[in-house]
Length: 69
Image 1 (cartoon, rainbow, N blue to C red):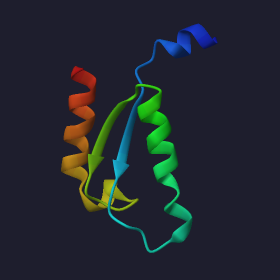
Image 2: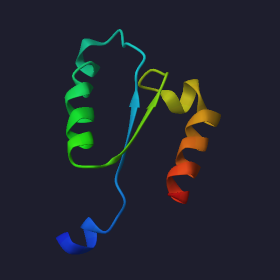
Image 3: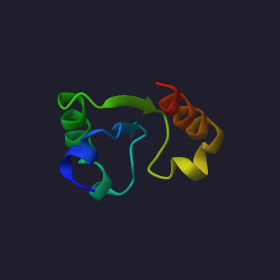
Image 4: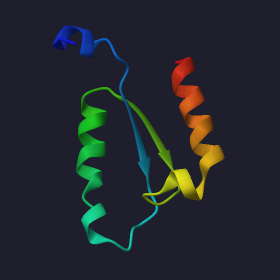
């Protein structure tokens, strides 16, 4: 895939906003801001880093909604 083809793929950033006990995960906010600046679809959910374990149904609904955009 070349850059032009990659640019056509929709981009989304799902920001899990629950604070982490692991300080390594906290700098994620800088990436969230970059995603917003680059006009990515941006979604927040109250979950930790392992949202797929903590809130799988809510996460699946977010994915489904992103597909429909």
